[in-house]
Length: 220
Ligand code: DX5
Ligand code: ZN
Image (cartoon, rainbow, N blue to C red; front, side, top):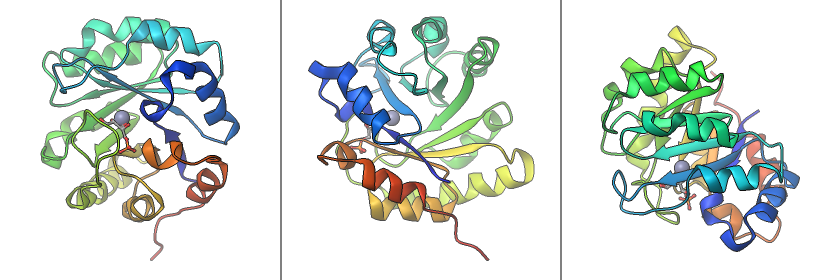
């Protein structure tokens, strides 16, 4: 089954805890938390203290997406805040391999992400030590952008690598995901769909999450 990780970036921040409960009740597998530092991306969102504050509202796994420079500096803070999976960008400054090792040492699952303009070969050296590859299908920083279909071949390339070398690797896609683009990504090999605006604009996101969970890879 495909996993669905709604991006809380599109939720109502004035009711952040309740929005988390809404996502959990709708059947989401994980909650995707977009952390931005105003340096790696031209936007600032929230950090570990806010994540810690909403942790008590739900037991749903927290899928933190760190769009920050030199992420090793903050791994312990996000681990202490209650994140279950932490993804760092391969383009970020600092010791990315060290950040991944630190996430693992804290007993969490490790993700590594790449931006739309980054060639897929740049992420490959990091995949051996990863539980998840996060393929960005928009330029990171903002919700509500259009899906960049040129990124789809990267999903297939990572899936091909994973089938041979690391079959349990989750491949997540993030940016412009809706029923149409999500299905294409799953057919290309994605196993996790991250979506903000297309889910949060719905009064009831449960039927859409259920539909997406039923997407499967193209056989044969
Ligand atoms: C963008 C974030 C995404 C974003 C997706 O930088 O990483 O998770 O919330 O939003 P949509 O689904 O609206 O493109
Ligand atoms: Zn994200």
